[in-house]
Length: 423
Image (cartoon, rainbow, N blue to C red; front, top):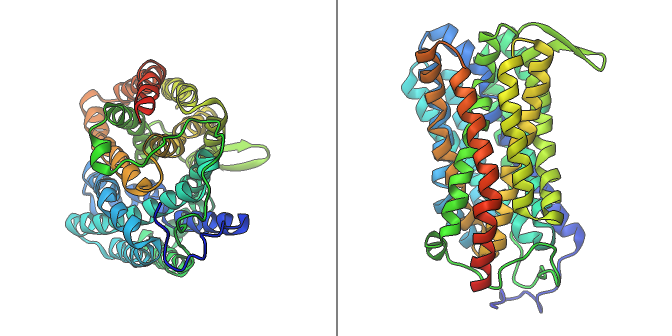
């Protein structure tokens, strides 16, 4: 093991240091959450102003996800090499620029360019935050990755209502401008506190509940292992349904005529769409550390089976009751609760198999599956236009999740055991 010069016998980092780094990463994730999860609030207002069509506007969402994911392996290499601080700081500037451009965009081209800039910035911040969590917490990898990913999943929960209100009162342009600037500034400030652990600062767990590799795999080696591609396919299958729900929830609610219907739960009354978005963000965040913690105790593949099956059933049931505002809110929450855990289970599994040294880069390779899944999001609009309803979209999404659940136990688990035995 190579020690960093001046590391003074590689003294162990304190728990407060480890948790502090985790919190800094979570704050950065919260600040970029709206780039993905707040997008659905802007689709209809943009279309009402420019009449570009929802399918054309949603191409921007796909571009964002593609640039956010497919460049992460390169960004991850730079993060592993130079550390998270400088990379995240520059990316905070990029995400601010992206939303300012959205506020000024009067053409689809400008909207698409802004999406690409935002995706690059968000990808660096996401990769650095998750990679740092995986490196600082080898003993609680699922939980740490889940808590960090929760910042991205639930980070927009508190801002859904303020953004919706600002769109209604001041226009979507003002919401893009002021929230974009605020989010970017916070990322820049917090990034100055981020750092990766030095060699020897974090000890490998003596007897981890989940099997971990005995060596560090280089990224080129990872791509040559069949188990990586099984995980990749599963990630795409599960990710497609969740991204469709994320991008299309507002249009779905509008088509089922429940978006503005008041719903009361536990004494709180809100329009069904606003309620669903708020609950979805919270549950999408809670599920990540929850299922990560579960996987630390019962195994990654067993947890995948439970979560993926639950999501498949939830998506199928949602279609049949979506016209009921209360059921729309509750079941959309269930779908997001069962979907978000892919962002804790897959990075933890990837690092279990391939080691800590190149954790950011190796998970970055796997994370590109989210970009591949995003290519299917515009097809939901095309399929809906061709069939006249959302039936086929819901059925396909449900089926993909159920098949992935079976693959977790039937394919991934035995292949992962075999691969790690040979490592």
